[in-house]
Amino acid sequence: MSNTTLETPELTVAEFRETAAHIEAEVGKVIVGQKDVVRHTLIGILSGGHVLLEGVPGLGKTMLIRTFGQALNLQFSRIQFTPDLMPADITGTDIMEESNGRRAFRFQPGPIFANLVLADEINRATPKTQSALLEAMQEQQVTVANQTYPLPKPFFVLATQNPIEQEGTYPLPEAQLDRFIFKINVGFPSEEELSEILARTTGKETPQADVAASGERIVAMQQLARQIPVPTPVSQYISRLIVATHPGNSPSPMVNQYVRYGSSPRGAQALVLGAKITALLNGRFNVSFDDVTAVAPAALRHRLLLNFEGQAEGIRTDDIINDLIQHVPQEKA
Image 1 (spheres, rainbow, N blue to C red):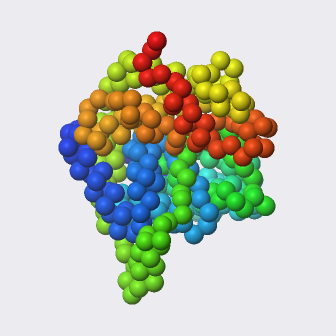
Image 2 (image 1 turned 135 degrees about the vertical axis):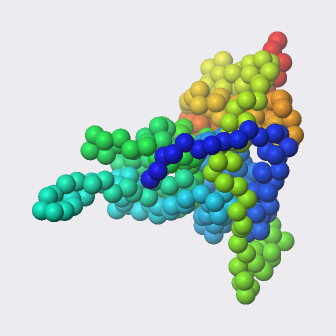
Image 3 (image 1 turned 90 degrees about the vertical axis):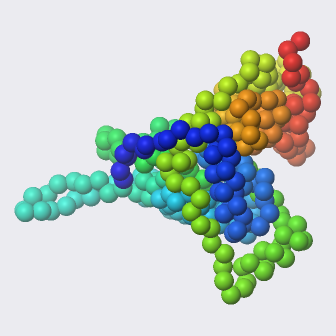
């Protein structure tokens, strides 16, 4: 439960790219394919944010997060969300102890006190329990019985949810979805990838990821990413994109027809941070328009709330984001 200050030596862009490539290579030892999923999860971690992975059962979402924990050599904790899970089961609670004839309360930290927290099937817990994560995700602290306890640094929540099984689930409220910097859709593997998965998982030995980075290196990479400048035209483009997610005067026909509420300012922050890290991963010390559009689906798909017509017609938010990118000009008129 220590919260010591990490010494973070300065990094070069080359060292940033080398470390990121090493992390992806180690995760690739265990996870077959899913390069975009791995890349966006890494970008989310290097942004200092939290990531929500959505996909049907059996696609390796939990394994992916566990593998990141191995590759990053971080204190890992898994919380299996169930309907009977209580907030204290996550945050911890005060327990009574007796010593030398005296009784006193001592705080027993819960599984949230880790560097990398896997919130497995997060939509299976009740809203009361889900809300126990809100303070931790936003403030990186936990309050129990009027006492505040800081969480270890770095701190990430990587959550999973199943999009097809709705019975016995509690959809995440928009306020909590907004705390995730990215929502990543995990797709079904190809025929070749499935064959490779079978070879890796049914053989004599199960592949394991080696350590590729430390917590100190991750924090240093985060600090370097925040130093990347964003040109004024790119910053203005991000602002126009976010404003255009709101129906009414949006240049996107799909937004005006199918969206009830658009993105919050956190969506703009997600675009900026994601674009900065994308630029670094490509060996550049400046952010381009392409860096923004590359992370736009992951940053915005959970921040657009469809209206009744959009839900009834089965409109995907990814299609709306693509329409948005097509209709919002990169250069200001």
